[in-house]
Length: 347
Length: 119
Image (tube, rainbow over all chains, first blue to last red; front, side, top):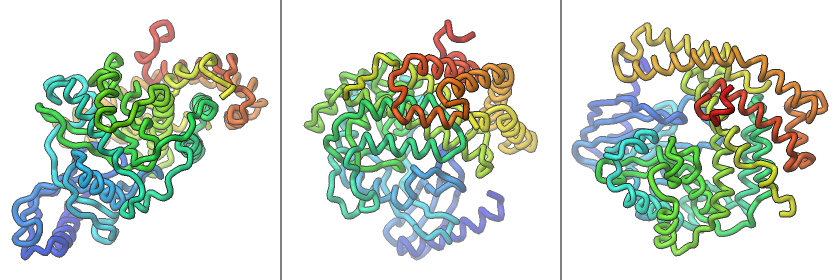
């Protein structure tokens, strides 16, 4: 963003916030881009309001759709509704402040959250054990947070945009991922092999609840004492709660700590037990491991979509191009997880 | 088209664009972001070199895969065959796909391979 664009952006935003919060005066002291967020633009705001519902000095994070995005990602307005539902349900999330669907203000819908301190970068969280406090306690805390998310159940008028729940989440996931892979000219038969395995091995449909669908190390923040926020709600949808556990435990999100199967930070069994205790629901290990294969497939498909944002010319970016290449390792992992002797053709 | 839109020229062009931005002082020289991008560019150039060296092997493996499982047409035909269930749990197909995945990963991230697979 150029300096002149930033001035326009800042003035429009300040005017909008003034009206939205019913303040008598508003000043936006700082607007600064935040790193991270491959699918959205994230900005740090420092504002001061006189009067109104946000009176005082405030530090926020503004999330706005990037120039190009991927179909799997929900709008900032929808994401805001999801975070609000989670906040009301007791999940540790940044306080949702306000959202704007009007693309005329900043060029795209946006949402504003209270800034939360902490570190979210997955590799750092895994490697730097001075972060997150006691790791066993963090593992259990994350399991409890996920259990709270899974308490959000149908019907929910505020989440009507999520649509009807899938009758069969696993089959729906396979269809969705085939759609992603088919939406670019990139052809990956190794991933298709994994998807066919997922179709043949599909578990019977079970309970359907709100699932985060990106609950993993790298998408929560910690400080030196423990968890500070669960982030990145843009993929949330009705689904199989075991899919969230599979995503969290998948090898691709352990950042090199394969021995710590719960997100590279803790013991799988400890995570399961804490989840069961908080949710009252038994963890189905076989189903979780099925979803771990699907997790690799899903991350691979998303990585390819990200890479295609670069390769198609929609958003030339070295970071996006390299994200696309992550699919190579995931494809290799999928083929290792689905050898011929792991096919049960009778199912 | 296989994965080639994310390899070779496209990848190098992205690295060169990032280098040009760095040379222009965006982000500021010496900043942690500039150092991060410089490291990413260096990694990309190494990756592109490996891409170039492995491209003939990857292309040959794709041709072999298509000949055996895609009726000699293209990778899309292989995908159609996989989706049809005609090769469910097929050892030969799995081996061919695995070999292709190993070749790709030798370029992208050789350290992620089992030691004996690194070539």
